[in-house]
Image (cartoon, rainbow, N blue to C red; front, top):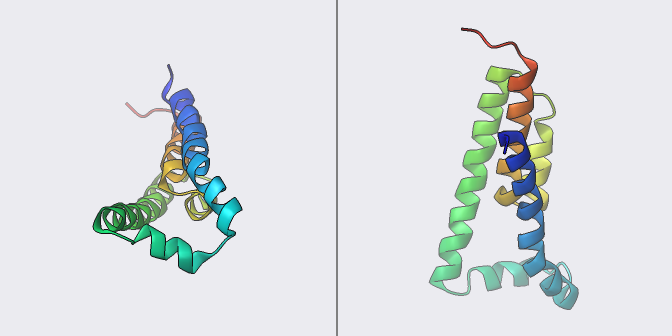
Length: 110
């Protein structure tokens, strides 16, 4: 399987799996952000995962900015939108997909 295809499949999984858990909660509670934060940080294990994802999102956005500038990756703003609307589970494979597209577009230097 080509990396580009793998990254697209991971984008799909990165949307479906988190939203499979989030949508029933949102249907029950609406977009109640204070409740969301309380439940996310209700115990140390939840807080561990919450903080891990927050740091990962910041690292991904920094990496995206640096690498996009270095390689001239277009549409890098899509990664920001993906991270803010879904999370790192979509943002990272999307960035890797965009990176593959850019690497394919440019001739290889030997």
